[in-house]
Image (cartoon, rainbow, N blue to C red):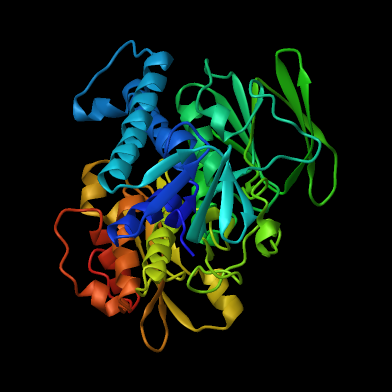
Length: 463
């Protein structure tokens, strides 16, 4: 049966637009449907990109105003924040990147169809008054912020991460509900710009999915920087009060409730798959807790329907979605696309950064896997020492028998960049010895990773 397209991708976030471009490169006739007015999804528009722009700018502001640069002979007086300029620069970066995706669509002859898609059946969808058919569909609609039961964001005082990117003034007191990477990054931005920031986390520690040792060290650093952190605390109420709000928290183990008055409350309690409104049931697919169940190749139980990114199982990360988009497009084109789910790095872009790939010590213990540990502090790394930025360490976990690297966890300067080397090593099945014997340029931060690998056998040089 003739169809309008070989492939229709629903959603133009990092997974969707990459899948569309990759499929077009394979010679397929491709359309991508996006309801937002710009391409790039949450990541480029209201997520990864704008938050990193604010983290970068706020870091400069804190560096200039804290006196930290004086030891290098840079003395600055009268530092002033121009919040409007910072937000404008953030918006400029977003526009450049979203426009760039639109250019790539034109270059690769991907048709951008603006609107909301709704399945009619497994081979056709509607977008507005158009009905479109395709041999294959990729569902790549991403995710949206969740809220607390009974708490409705108003976009002004009680906000999600989207509104936290565009606050018109620095809050006197920002209460962040949720100690994951989104809340900690946005909390870091506004703390650097002058807010008192309080983080309330239900779990026993912040970034609860990360390595415990790294998570505990991370909490100590954030507290030292001025962030107030309450863990093991359940938020039982958020209510508007005048121009602000009151957050009520209770110890998870029981005890007296406390009230925190805030100028702004950031709800950062996670995200959920954005599958509502697609009429997926018309295809015969059955969602599992809002997610699309998939096979190892990103196909579903319904022929011709595939899914990637935040709507499927796994961490909700842009780079995971991108790799899945490439793999799904390759598979649709008859090639062999694959994503190694054991080697998906994750980064918290605070200062210091926290980066991880592979398994944590806790996961290895739970699985009964015997392992060795090698650690190396940035305090003993020459580049970190020279830069006077020595907080944190690198931890390498290796199989006790084969020496194959099972996980790498970093807290410190350049962690987000350094984790790429660890991921590459793990993708190629490297041992800690392989990493230890690889020549690293001197003086650089990645030498700390080399030394941590050397420490697996108890033979680091500079410690």
